[in-house]
Image (cartoon, rainbow, N blue to C red; front, side, top):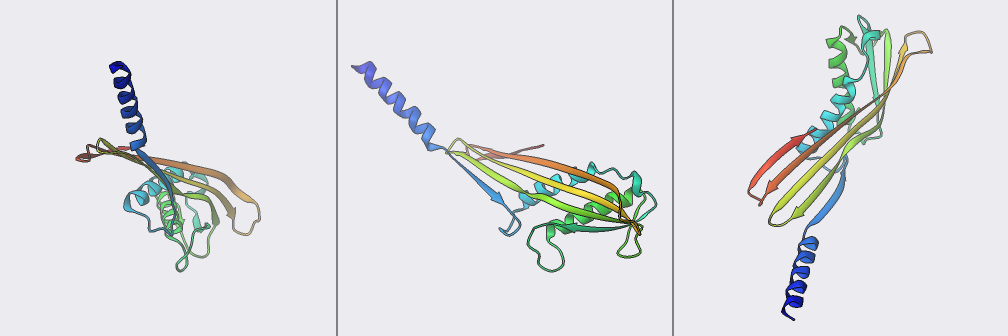
Amino acid sequence: MRKNAERLLLSALVLLLMAYGCATKRYVGPTSGTAADVQASTARAIDRAVSHLPTKPFCRKRIKIKVCALTPKFGNESPEEAYIKSSLAAKLEKEGARVVEKDEDIYLMVRVRAVGAVRTRRDLPPLLYVEAISALADMNIRAIKRGELTAVMDTNIRGKSRTLETYLFYILGPIYHRQ
């Protein structure tokens, strides 16, 4: 009888511990007031995507960059569009191109298919708290030579970023792991 009571108590304790933790998953888009860690993960994903862009066709050329995304705009461009444009401009200028607003040799059209982050929280009080942020930047880039309607380059670039933030016993932390 006592063994059955101990097994029942142990089973109830295990079930309680399993049910005690919780996880939430939330998409963090541009209109929800993005936190600094989400912005940093999104920026890392954009930078990784831009690093895959071949820059050889743009050396010593004047480039006009136009970024189009479905993100809400407050003025001419959204914060994501502005960051993508500045990241591309920095890479192109580093490789010898010149970014201009008119009289361009090449028109660079950037179509953003996806840019954003997903935040997942896992909680097992009072032992563990883990927050994971997965960011993605997926773009199509088409370069068109001035005076021609043919594309000099048409390529897809994609970048991902993942950040894990862990707290042990809600005291020790944060412990960061970035990929």
